[in-house]
Length: 141
Ligand SMILES: Cc1cc2nc3c(=O)[nH]c(=O)nc-3n(C[C@H](O)[C@H](O)[C@H](O)COP(=O)(O)OP(=O)(O)OC[C@H]3O[C@@H](n4cnc5c(N)ncnc54)[C@H](O)[C@@H]3O)c2cc1C
Image (tube, rainbow, N blue to C red):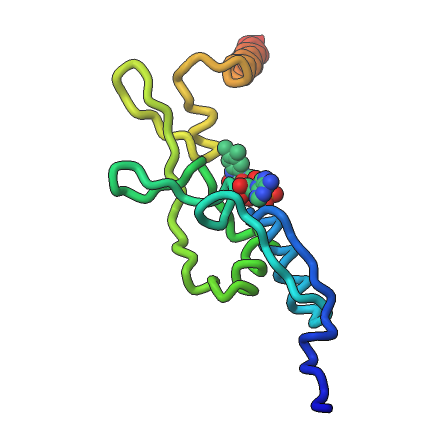
């Protein structure tokens, strides 16, 4: 009798959900060499919350996803999937539109300069003004 192929000794395992968690789990199980893995995904494609969406022919992020150079686990995971070369690093630009203009909101300086009503910024401004007021009083004495 011919020997059974090695794959017949593998346990069969199902992973439900093809988002990042399911892909990572399926990949780890398959790479362990101990399981035959089937990944079940109810949507048309993989990716879950991270999957892109097509709007009038334009492919866009479903949500405002971003990874930073400090996200080592995510970058290592992408490399594991052979996708490291696909990462397109860009300088982040984010802003708020209000009172007819777009105001940048990507750095600490932008945060401190933010002109629209925001309780935290208002509080910081009040503290800064109070500090300046005290400095002024000290200078006058
Ligand atoms: C607005 C927003 C912004 C975010 N921004 C960031 C970010 O900038 N950076 C970051 O790292 N993370 C971000 N996240 C978090 C990130 O999207 C999630 O942590 C991650 O995608 C979750 O992956 P998951 O696989 O655990 O779940 P999901 O992505 O939800 O995947 C679950 C999958 O299971 C499938 N499924 C469910 N039930 C069944 C079933 N019965 N049978 C078969 N398939 C099924 C679903 O269709 C889906 O594909 C953001 C999330 C949101 C909502």
